[in-house]
Image 1 (cartoon, rainbow, N blue to C red):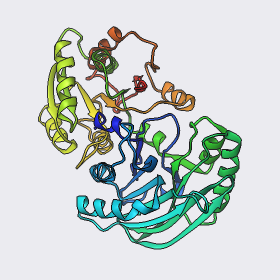
Image 2: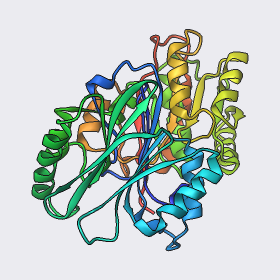
Image 3: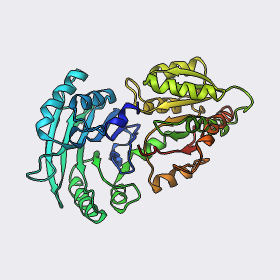
Image 4: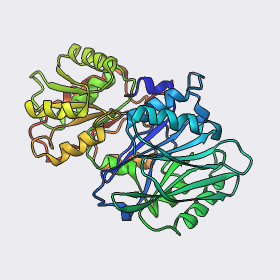
Length: 390
């Protein structure tokens, strides 16, 4: 659910083992995962968030609102940066109230004497905790967490925002220090850099990027939230056209979103474009609805309680009945050049903001539905439209 999130702050969510995540900005907050974690049998939901001292883009500081959003994302481990230490008891108590779980915390200031820093929250207890100060007033928080009988070394950091050169120094120090811990390892935080920058590429030499893992789930289209009528309908059109659906018939589109306002808007936009629309409010009910009658296209929100969009995509890909159904993913992530190149290798079209008139976007949904029954056995990426600035 993205509409209300736009009044808050950037969130990254990772689903480790089927690793996936989404974010608002081009700056990387992806969980970075070392290869030893691949194949683990215990799903682990990791969330990384720069909470900016608890203040939303509306200028209001409200940790109850932050705790509500954290609880709705249903993470297992959380990495927060720009967290004021005096608010940690408030946040953990609120999170316990809203989730019914005990949360363990480990905080490290950004630098000695600075009244904010990196916070790790975990519903699993800590076997050990540690910390390391980096050059240029930055730090790393570390916790060893036992998940399903296996220790995972988890790191939270926040790199310099002013200079790539400073970040490269910090990444070199981070890699040296984290390399002294046993695998599997997960590094989270606000890297203040896109995936095609030298500092993040240095990280990727050792760690996998869970955003790329998420793309490998087979997204058909990525569209912004909030979206326009043209953006949504064009995305569905393109998704259908890659699958061979008859353009002359009425397409059956399933919209999956826990936000009733977002569903209402999507329903209005798509029905006005001549599509038949069904709705589901969560991932579990959506899968039931898909098996009841397979849709031509699924329009899928990522951030939902119970079963999120990542879980829906993973389930669809593993299901022979649903694996060929094209999916339009609602996201607010901006893309780096490296990510655009990754998408282009399997995409029919990759769109950047401003490349198309709004009137063009409606046709994508229609063309998406047009090929749904002759597709290869997994969805493909056909369009990317990053979120416009607000």
